Amino acid sequence: MAAEDRLRAYRGKRDFERTREPSGQADRTRGEEPRFVVQIHDARRMHFDFRLQVDDVLKSWSVPKGPSTDPGDKRLAVPTEDHPLEYEDFEGVIPKGEYGGGTVIVWDRGTYEPLSHDRRGCPVDFAESLERGHATFRLHGAKLHGEYALTRFRGGTDGENAWLLVRKGPARPGGNGTPDPRRARSVRSGRTLAQVAAAAGQE
Image 1 (spheres, helix red, strand yellow):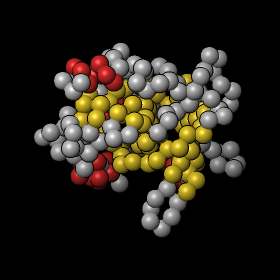
Image 2: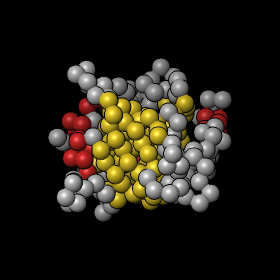
Image 3: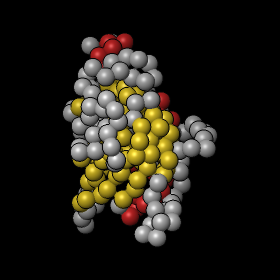
Image 4: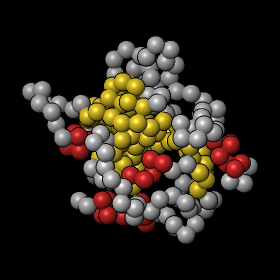
């Protein structure tokens, strides 16, 4: 499926005359390694958005408590619509009344290595591993490093499903789960959610 088709749901929820979110029309070149981004989104409910580049889009999950560096933490991850690759750079305030209205910062970003294998130990295409409901990968971010897994644990005829995002292996030295989102700073601008909102006149 072309990226244009995969972004239909994303575009259908947004009025790009009002929001500064990218429309996905820009020709973003793909790097050699796939990208990931974790954004903190202070919307109706505070949450983290976890996004992995798969082909020409960012596959996306809403993670209420955010990704953790502690392997003992199993984080709920609810799939959302595919986002354009340019969304990796988005930081700002989505206007009230718009889908997802609220403040967004880029908490972490970087590249990732797909690690999924079949039972015989042969590599599996990453998109295929997500389709099957289990994908492993290694993150190389400014804050998140190491191996993680996404596993689908609920599905139904209504199309609803949920996933678990789990850190694999030993915890990072000094790792302490996930930081307080209101005190966390953007890797893009160094600002907090409050500072980004204030700069946009949304205190």
